[in-house]
Image (cartoon, rainbow, N blue to C red):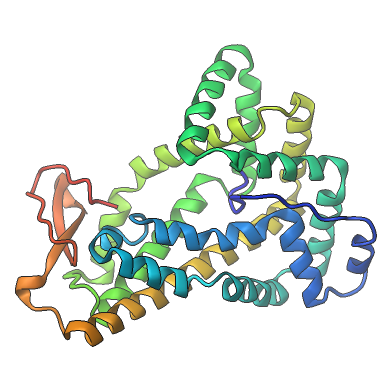
Length: 316
């Protein structure tokens, strides 16, 4: 549920003796330890699997390039490079006092149990987690609506859905403009036009993201007490923790945007080496919602065409 943490796997670090090192000015190793303890390192490195998995930020391009896309995404979204870039930015913009505050919380008994809960929630597939989370959320709506209110307040405290939506939209724009500029796709839109089309999709996406966040929280914190959840809410609502999350969210999306821009260049280079510039015959189309509730085609190597006014599953 914590916007920037999509924690997978286990974080089994001994915290004894670690925290004293943060009393002085933070060193690079301190930031690296912080990433491991909080699970933010997994949130960063898991972007590789998300990129390799297929449609999302990149529209239908993964389906079109197949194994070639997977190989490029695996190379460009290199975990070590992304973590190194993350630490670079943390060193530059995360003040020591905020780092120390966050470390103190996650070193606490509650903080460690929260990290454990988030790690253990990754034992099932995304589909299974969503199904289980929806059932739990439905039960809470009947038996404990205050718990849902706490989850919503927790989301709001760390920036809310609107902040995430703005960040994701910016990553989409940067990827598509980079891909078009590099010759990987024929976009046929200016940047303002692209932003307008993406903005028109925002209400529907906002509703989806809100529901998904609540479902994820219901599943992740299903075994925690109401008191634990309320205490976590209070911590997230502290101005200092809110600032920590604001910084880390910004870092995550900047790393993501940089990787997708590099991926766009890698795709273009591969196309140039493999078969030169694409001919009109080879060009396909992918789609986003256009003005007046119609579809506008955006050139990409998808090999499909959607009729105006009809739904298209290849939309972002």
